[in-house]
Image (tube, rainbow, N blue to C red; front, top):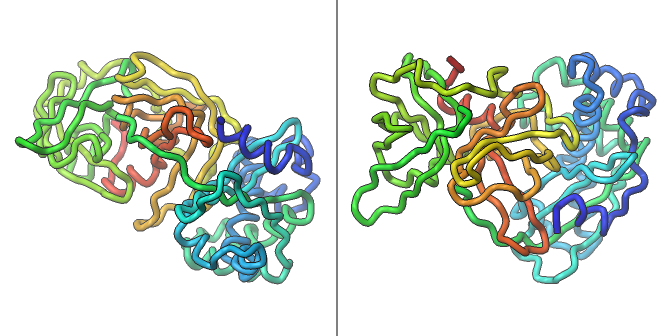
Length: 356
């Protein structure tokens, strides 16, 4: 079942706030319109995300889980995603994929934190995530406003089986020159960029390259000059890169920074597995977005549209900004189905990249 349908089936579609009524939440939430440059869908996402950032770092979070008979370790060992679902009002609810959860049905939990705990949690999150000054007091107030105005819920479920899904457009192919016995498979170029050493090259999925130190990229020789395990990414410098050979490009607005994705935003990608442009929508994201930290693997989720060979492909939004790079998808026919993309800003930061 697709992720948004799954969340709605257990938590319902009522109790959220529509984007049109977002400004009614309060002055802090309205202030997000300025940060979001007047885009109400982004402002809504930032405000609702601020609730979860404050709640997850608050004492109420662990207490809420333990009152349901769950282990205090549930939150730490389970991967967390904020899932947008419901219509016309939108809900943003928390999914925890707990590897120790062995029941077919998820645990359904209302999120009803104390206001004082939310304020405390917001301050803890700001310190942990090194939140920029423009967000600080605003995040705390917006978390309280959002919590008062709408319903939030938590689902704790078993994680589905996943498979690593193996931008210029049309897509460029990456063929690793693997050593004998090593695992490496063809994948898709993310973006053509330049690093801080003025080397021109491409991003690619680290899991697809494996231990390979060299690769053929659209027929050009390349060498892996940097790797980042957390973001599952590498940068392949191209020898004598022929700039005129770069195909018509997308994502020229660069990586999305300082903002969460728009709710249910139409996006697209081009992968060698999918053999052409594929349209989908954003359904979920990691609670820490948009704040990038070296140790945090941030992701965006979409409908389960990637297949083998698509790893590394760039996910582009309607403003031509890069949201993420293809990482994995759930197994076909799983109870929960989605595709996961590594947050693009974390990849650019890890390799000190700028677009050409």
